[in-house]
Amino acid sequence: SKAPDTEQYFLDLKKDIDYDAQIEKRAEALSDDALDRAYYSAVKALMECSDDLRYPGFQIWQYQLEWQERRVERMGYLFFGAPNDRPTAQPERDFYIYFIQPFNKPKFTDNNLADEVFFRLTGLDDEIMRHISSYAAALDLASTASGGAKAIYESKARDTLKAMNKWFQEKYSSAFEVTYQGKKKNLQEWAKGVSLRDRARLGADERINFRDVVNVISGLVLGQRFVDLSPEYPTFSVLVTEANRKQLIGNAL
Image 1: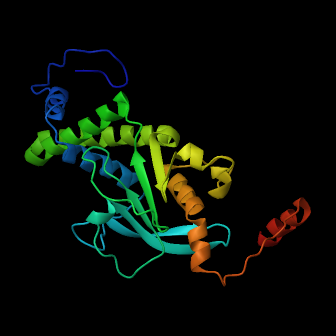
Image 2: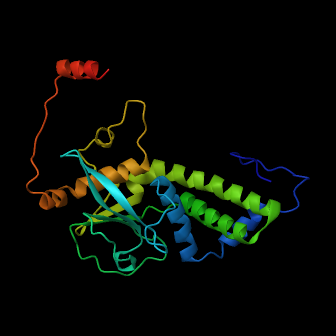
């Protein structure tokens, strides 16, 4: 067996099945669809999506974004897949955020619509490939195992999911490409000149997470779309000086 978090191996006299070897072997024969399902499992956890699907059989959720310039919420949809694969979502909303499959890449025409934002995982390195394939293999083996073996495969799947999530949190800025109305940039380029932490309203000790980044970037690119939908909505700004900021905080307390 391999010791956790090290490169050391040891002789485990109690182990009669090499579960890690079984996972590695299964990972070699996985289909692209299985890898996409594993990827979506990680994104679902990072985006804090519930298991309550509005349209059974489709991974689509009603979703809220803050229109930060106006401090109001706009309603839309989050979908795992391409536009030609999603159901006709009712009621109609203001936007669609798509996470496109990275392995079995779908064929579709991007019509450069003002309400569609596409997220693609393009920075696939050896580490994330290993995590995704191991996670998919562990889930597949758990689905056919029973008893103690099933519990072990499920435990290994959970551990690998944590590793996947950690990678996404650390590499998202360069690993994801965002497309809006034909313009393709990675997250870092879309956020140029913008403080993601300020936009997400995080405290000094808070760490920005993947969901916050997706929300802020989506809000940035959809800003004009929201303006066009609400031309009558008043624009206003508030200047808060250091003195009245302290007074406002004192009043709130």
